[in-house]
Image (cartoon, rainbow, N blue to C red; front, side):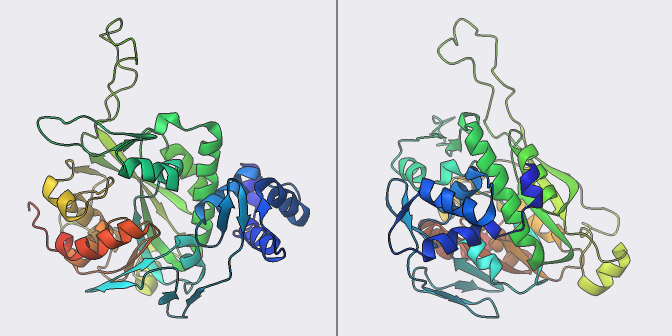
Amino acid sequence: MKSLQKRQPGIVRDAILSVLSDTKTPMTVSEIERNVEILLGPTPRSSIRSYLRLNTPGLFSKDERGVYHRPKPTASISQSGSASQSSWNEPYSFGKSILFHGDCFEWLVKQKKESIHAVVTDPPYGLHEYSEEQISKLRNGKGGVWRIPPSFDGNKRSPLPRFTTLTQKQLDDLSVFFFDWGKYLLPTLVPGANVVVASNPLLSYLVSNSLSNAGLERRGEIVRLTMTMRGGDRPKNAHEEFANVSVMPRSMWEPWIIFRKPLEGRVQDNLRKWGTGGFRRISDKTPFGDVIVSRPTQKKERQIAPHQSLKPQEFMRQIVRAVLPLGKGIVLDPFAGAGSTLAAAEAVGYESLGVEKDGKYFSIATVGMPKLAAFKVKE
């Protein structure tokens, strides 16, 4: 991880683009790795493979197993950030929200500096479970690395990723991914911007280290008190022998890690200039707290926006409202999924931007966002 701290943001990505742009024939991963090392010197192979996998399709095309080439560029993004790209759907606008269909790395690098006031997002944890192969298995009901839980009290429960199955290489890829994402994100943020990232108890330490190394300040975490149905299982194939043993505790909470771009001066200076640097209070007498009692997403919400990681509007609106201390600015979700963050921003009256790479989820969001924004939650 020491090399990650020294590496400039985007240098590996640019080297891969240079290598593939200079050849007319597809290259294997090993050939790409050798050529990148010629340009940059010793380079973590996990970083190279992560860029290739996460930007295919998009920046790179895969001809067969482990063979890539650089397609002719089709994208153009204006200075204002409005996307026009033949390989993606047109941006979807609703109220004060705009959702882009594309890769968030491509999108972030095109944005104006210091134009985003807060980030609230639920990223693709493990990365592997959101690969084309694993998403295909999930959608076909085969599971793959996704655990399809049985029905409980007559309710069909949402699939859960098996984070315990990740290999060391996949964990290394995750660290590289979040370090690079943090580096791409940082220039777009105004000083004092809050960055709130959904996590889980098994992987939050990796994400926190990577985002801290990228230059964001760790500011604590929000505890979402809810039964996630992870953990609590008896030993596999030995559940009768060890009937009184759980392999790990039943998870009854979910961490949302809080980061902040370093302030410009004191908090009051930053608030006056940028409108950021703290959290919006619930009322004059009640500050925003870091423990929020929640519950699993209701069936009615999942019918509106069928995404396996959909978070309830009752919870999302509390976080989104809090991240803009003066109630003004732009909230970004670079992994927008079904658009729940943007819907929450719309519900509380904020401007918001989102980016979603998966075409199916983008389509789900365009239909579901207005309905989620209008969804009635308990006061």
